[in-house]
Image (cartoon, rainbow, N blue to C red; front, side, top):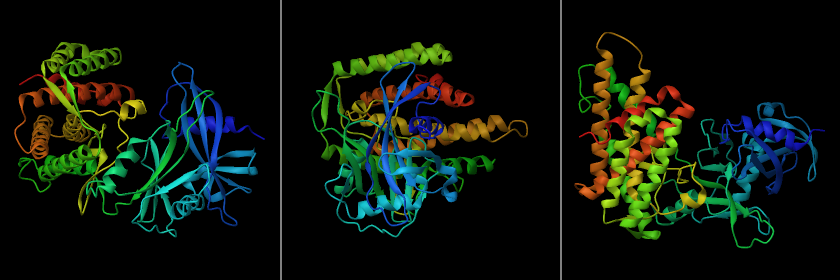
Length: 467
C-alpha cells in the first residue's frame, strides 16, 4: 500500500492552486484536522488534511489544505480527481479523491454549514439571515488558481483556501464586517470554517486556521476584466470611432466602479481602526519600494534604464506631511470585481498572495487600491492590442493609439468618481508612487509567468514621471 506522503506530494505539485511551482520541496508531514460531519449511508467519509511542505531552497515551511473523500471502492465518475489508495487510520483502506470534485463529499460541507455541529475540531460558523439550500448540487469552478471555489446551485459559493497560514484570514474578516454593515458592494458572507491552529512546544494563544468561507452566489455576475476586454475589442473593431463613440464604451462602468470602491473604503474606515502616519513612515514606505525595486532589478534587467526615475518618484514620498491608513483590499484589479444587475461587487479581500498574512492584515493607504485599478485599466487595452493579430499597414499604430485612448478615458473616469474632486498635490504624489510600485511588481510577475507580456508593464514604467 502506498504511503500517503508519496501520493500527496505529486498531487500538490501538479495542482493549479499550488503556489510554489518551480521550487523543489519535500512533503514532510500530513496532519488530520478533522472529519467533515454530515456523512450519509453509501456516501464518502470526508476529511481535511493539512500538508506541511519544506522547500529545498530554504525559507519557512508552508501549509496546504487538502480536502479528501474516502471510498471503499473505486469511483469511475471521479477518476479525474483520483489521488490514490492507502490505508487510513480513521477510515481503513480507501480509494482517496480530491473532495472538491465530488458532489457527495461537498454535500457534507453544505449540511454542516446548514446545521453547524458543536464540540468538533472543525468549527462551522454561520451568520444569521440566510437559509441554505441543502439540496443544491456542487460545481467546482475550473478557473480558480490560488484557492478552490465550489458553487452550490445558484444559492451559495464556498471558497476553500488552499495555502493556510495561522490567524484570521483577511477575506473572512473584511467580508464579515462589510456584510454586517449591509454593504452593497460585496457578496454577503454566510459563514466560515476554522479549527485550532498548529501548536509548537511552549506556544500558547488562541490562533486559528481559517479553512473556507461560504458566501452569496452572484448569479448575474460578469467578471470585470472580461467586460473591459470586450469593450476594448469593440473599440478596435470600429476603425473610425473614438472610445466615447462606440457602443461598448466602458467609462460609465469605470465611474460606477470608482464610486463602489470609495463607498467600500468609507465603510471599512467606519469599522476598522484608522491611523495617521507621520512623514517618517512615508520614508519607510519609500525605502520598502526601493527594496522591491532592487529585488526586481535582479529579475528584470530592463528595469535598470528606468531605475533613477522610479527612485525619484519614491523619494518624493519623504516630503509629504503624513498619510492616513486603514484596512483596504490590498490586491485590487479588474479581475477582483464582478458586475451584477445590482451594481459592482468587489471580491477576494485576501490581499497580495505573495505577502505574509501578518503584512496583509496591516492598514495601508486606500490609494494603493486605486493604483491597482489604474494599472488594470491600462493593462486591458494593452493585452487586446497584443493579441489582436497582424493586418493591414498602419493598423498596429492605430491600435496603439486607441489602446492609450481607452486607458486614459477609463482611468480618468474611475479616478474622478472615486475621489469626487480634484486630487491634492500630496495625493497625486502618493498615488504616482503606488502606481510605480505596482508596475515594478508586474514586471517581475510577467517575467516569471508570461515573459512575452513583460513589455506591458515595462512600457508603463517608461511613462512614469513623463508629463
